[in-house]
Amino acid sequence: MQTIEPIYSPFPAHIEKKELDVLTNLLQCSPVSIISTKYKGKSNIMAASKLMHISTQPPLIAVAIEQSRFSLDIIKSSEEFAINIPTITLLHYVEYLGHYSGEQMDKINFLQLETFTPVSITAPLLKNCCAWIEMEVHDINKVGNHELVIGYPKMIFVDPQSFTNQWILGPIDRRPMIYLNDNRYSPLGKAFEARLPIGGDNHYKKLQEQTNEHIASIHEEEEKLQEKMGQIRRELGTDLIADMAEAIINEELNDE
Image (cartoon, rainbow, N blue to C red; front, side, top):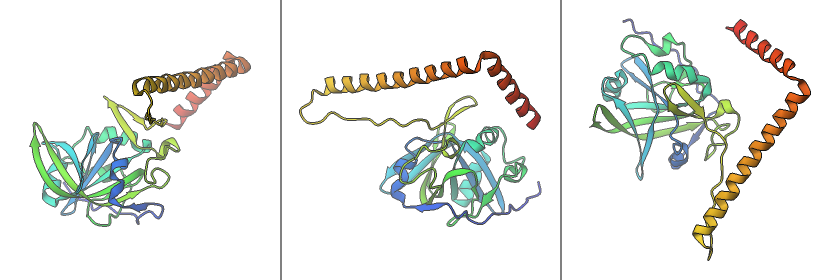
């Protein structure tokens, strides 16, 4: 197979460098990731659904990779890789990457994915992501039919519209994704703030009260939303809603 050297874009100006102490918050939700690798001019990417922040001192991240994966061979040779945390923009690409091997095709060039130049490693960084971690291999251990690649983060970069020192949960296309099952994914949703009992409170009773209050507020919001949707249906009429839905579907079909 002919190797085509990818063309890297300049490092995006809006991306911010972060210190390693943000790792806990960055990987707390265990977002879907795309692992990118490169060795001797050959690049590859693969999807990974589970990242593990296994140590804070020193900071170490582990990712389990099935032993037959082409990316694993490149990681062993190069002793480095990049973790790209994609947004919903790359949803269909993430699913695709899990079904095809880089041994048969140069997935980055075949899919015409946009990349930019890393700072401390050679593996390309992908655009349309919300965070990037440049990794150096620390250790690799066999675990069943997978190998646990443990890496040391050399550089962390984030999109400030997605992450400051914690996930912002702003526009849906700026959030990381969570893998559910099969081909189902979900962007991070609404955040809820947990509260602890204080002082001489009866902890059991206080936690029960706070839980009941929390669930009641969620149900109240859902009821208000349903009431508002019902009002919209009554004002517009079911025929108009059906016409609008048909128009939207037709427009989407025409775009395809």
